[in-house]
Length: 191
Image (cartoon, rainbow, N blue to C red):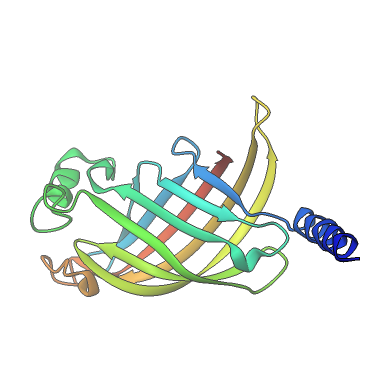
């Protein structure tokens, strides 16, 4: 009788484990991922810029978006505002100080599903050596098959930070606004 009970327990355990949906580990595709920002300039217009594609990983469970996690970094040396002199200033010690702080990072600490494809993502953003917890809305923008048969999944978030919170204080707010508007778009591929 014990052998039959043991065999049944093994069969039930195996069936239960086979129905568990595992989260996918995705790798950000830096060629198809973007960080775009804008900042008010002399209280008049806006300066726009980009950082070259974010790198890192996304853990994604399509059956439970709350299990999604982000661990992403950006090379600060890749900043591009379409003006070489301004870019050199931004890379220097008065702003991003790319020699001392070569990357910006974001690592999520919690993700809450807020809609069918909508998430509220809280995590640690590190810029200029300073780490602050932020919460941003993120949407899962879709999933499709790439040219090599790989599965691609997109995410997009939009948020604002205050540059003074990250000790980027060189210019007065009248020259360079304190508030930085950032859009992050990640297209991630199954590993």
